[in-house]
Image (cartoon, rainbow, N blue to C red; front, side, top):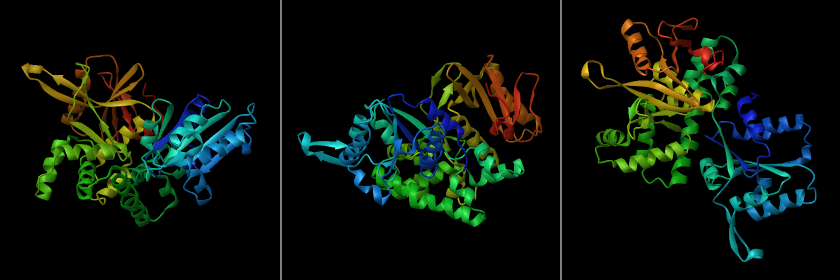
Length: 424
C-alpha cells in the first residue's frame, strides 16, 4: 500500500482542531483508503486503542441503518458520552447530504447528516472525519454545507512520486507510463494494457458522467459529453464558454447556448474531473475573466476520454505539472505579461504563477527547447516580469539542472516530480 505522506501529515496537523475534517476529491482517487487504512494505522501506531476509532461505512449493508442521521448520532453518543476523559475518533465514509429525517422527539423538525455531525463535533472528546458520496451529492457539497465549520482536505490521484514509489525501475519508462495512464490507484493492480484502458473508460461511463448527470440534473447529456471531449482536447490551451459553445454549434449543427455551456463546465469542475486556472496580469495584479485554461485532474482519464488518439506530450506535461503544484498546496494561476517593445502591446504567457502564502515563483513548461527560437520564446515572458522572483523552465530534454545567464533555473521534469529540487 502506498503511504500518502502529504495528506497524512495534513490530517495530523488538523487533528482536534474543533472542525469536521472533510476529505474530498474525484471518485476512486483513494479517499476511503486514506482514511480507513492509512490514517487508521497511523492512529494505532500512536497508541490509540482500536475501540476508540469508530468506523462507519455508509455504503456497506451492515451500516445502512446509520444512514438515518438520528440513529447515527445516538449510536456515537452512546459510545462516547460516558467516557468524557477518553478521546475518540469518528470516521464516516460515503456521507450523503440528501438523507433527511423528521426528529419527532424534538418538535418534528427536519434533520440531516450535517445537523448531526455539527452536534457531534461539539463533543470535546470526539474528532470527526468524513468522506463524501459523489453518487448522492458531490463531496465538494459537503465541505460547502459546513459553511466554514469544516477543514477540507483535497485528495488527488497518485502523484508521479507516489506512483514511482510503487513501480520503481527506470524513471523515464515509469514517467512514460504515467503520462499515458495517469495515477488512479487501481491501475497499479493491473498489468495488461487493455485492462488499464478499459478501467479508465469504465470510470468515465459508469461513474463520472452519471454522477454529474444525476447530481446536477443535466438535461442534455450529449452536450455534457461534447464539452468533456472538447476540454480533453484543449488542455493547456486558452478557451472560454463562448468558444466552446461556438465549436459545439458547428459540430452539432444546432445553436448551443454559451450560458448552458458555462453551467455545464462548472458542474464538471465541481465533480473534480477538471480544474480551471485563471489568467493573472503580473504587472497589473488583476485577474482576467476570460479566457482561462482547463486541466484534467488525472491525465489518464483525459487520454481515455479521447480514446488515446491525441497524445501530445507537451500539453500532457504541462497538465501534470499543474496537478503537481496543486497537490503540493500551492495557489496556481496562468500569468500574463505585456511586451511593449517598439510601441506594440503584445500579451505573452507565463504557464504558471505559483504562490505559497507570501512567496512567488514563475514556471514555464517546455517539453523540449531544441531551437534558438523556442528557447527565446520560453525565456522572453519570464524576463519581461523584470522582478526578482525565482523563474523556472521545466524541461524533458536536459540531463541535469542549471541556471542560465539570465538567472533562470532550467529543471528536469523527473527531478521536479520526484522532489529532488526545491521550488522555493
